[in-house]
Amino acid sequence: MSRNVYLVTGGAGFIGSNYIHYLFEKYAQVKVINLDKLTYAGNPENLNDLKNNPDYVFIKGDICDSTIVNRIFEEFKPDYLINFAAESHVDRSIGDAEDFIRTDMYGVYVLLEATRKYGLERFIQISTDEVYGSIESGSFTEESPLKPGNPYSASKAGGDRLTYSYFNTYQLPVIITRASNNYGPYQYPEKLIPLFVTNAMEDKSLPLYGDGKNVRDWLYVKDHCKAIEFVLKNGELGEVYNIAGGSEKENIEITRLILELMDKPESLIKPVADRIGHDRRYSLDSSKLHQLGWQPQHSFDVAMRETVQWYVDHQDWWKPLKSGEYLEYYKKHYPEGKSLT
Ligand SMILES: NC(=O)c1ccc[n+]([C@@H]2O[C@H](COP(=O)([O-])OP(=O)(O)OC[C@H]3O[C@@H](n4cnc5c(N)ncnc54)[C@H](O)[C@@H]3O)[C@@H](O)[C@H]2O)c1
Image (tube, rainbow, N blue to C red; front, top):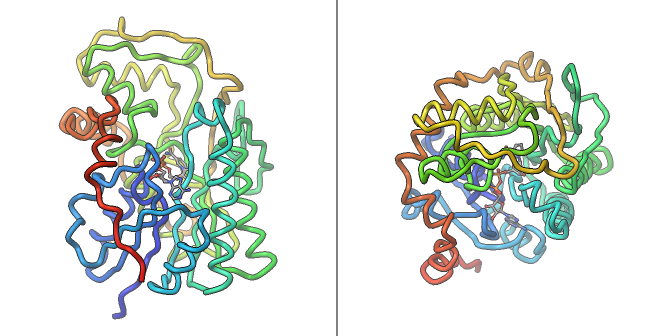
C-alpha cells in the first residue's frame, strides 16, 4: 500500500497535535508535514514524542506565506491538506482582530491557491460551530444561515465560505467541517476547561463570565480527530459536516464539575463581567454525519475526568505556558524545523 502524505497546518496547536498523534496511531505507513507558525498557541512540545520519527516533518512557517506553502507542495506533494491553522481565541479577537483576518481568511486563500496550482486529493477546512452564531432553542443544520457574532467567528466564516467557493468555481476537492467546543489534552490554558483546571490546582479563582448560563456543546478532541479522518475518507466534495459531541452544558455546570472532580470548593468561582457580544448558546445538529456513519465514542463524564487528570498529571506542560517562560524557552532552544531545499 502506498504511503499517504498529509500536510497538517497549525499542527502544533491543540486539535492539530492530537490529530497528528491520531494519524500515527492509526496508520502504520503515513507521512505528516506539519506547517505551523508557532504563535503563542503553537507548542512543539506537544509532538516531542515524534521528534526523531523520519515520517514526521515539522516546518516553522506561516500559511499566509505563499513561497513557503508552494515549496512544501513541490517538495512533499501532499495527498491531503487539513487546515487547523487559525487564531482561535474569541477574547483575543475582541481585543485586536487583525491576525484573525490575516490567518483565518487570507491564509486560507493562500492554501487554496497552492491547491489549485499543484492539486491534491482532499482539502479539509476546519471551520467551527461559531459561524452560525447563537441559537435560543433547537439546533443548527448545515443549511442554516451563517450569522457570526464576533471577529473570530466572522473571520472563520470567511475562510469557510472561501473554501466552498473554490469547489464551486474551480472544482477543488474541498470539504468543510464545523465542530463544537473541543476539550482534551494539550489545550492552551487560556480556554475555559484548562484555565479552570489549572487555576483550581493553584487555588486561584475561576473567572466565570456573566451568569454562567451560556451553553456550549462539548466534543472530546479524540472524537473530533476521528470525525475529521472519517469525513476525509467518506465525505462528499463541496459539502459541510457539523461535528457535535452531543453534550450541551452551561458554563456553570462545567465549572462545578471541574471543582467536584478536583475536590475544590465552589468559593473559587468568581463571576466577572460578561464578554462583549457573548453568544448565549451554540447547538449543532450532526445527523448528516451520523447518517454517513460517524458517532462520538467517548462519554462526556469519562472523557472529562480523564481530561482533568491529564492536566493534573502534566504540570510540566502547562506551568511554563502560564508563566510565559515557555516563549522565552522555545525561542532559545527550539530548532526552526526542517529547512526546505
Ligand atoms: N478548540 C475548539 O474548541 C475548536 C472548535 C471548533 C473548531 N476549531 C478550529 O480548529 C482549529 C484548531 O483549533 P485549536 O483549538 O487547536 O487552536 P490553537 O489556537 O490551539 O492552535 C492553532 C495553531 O495554529 C497555528 N497558527 C496560527 N496562525 C498560523 C499561521 N498564520 N500559519 C501557520 N500556523 C498558524 C498556531 O501556532 C497553533 O499551533 C482552528 O481552525 C479553530 O478555529 C476549534
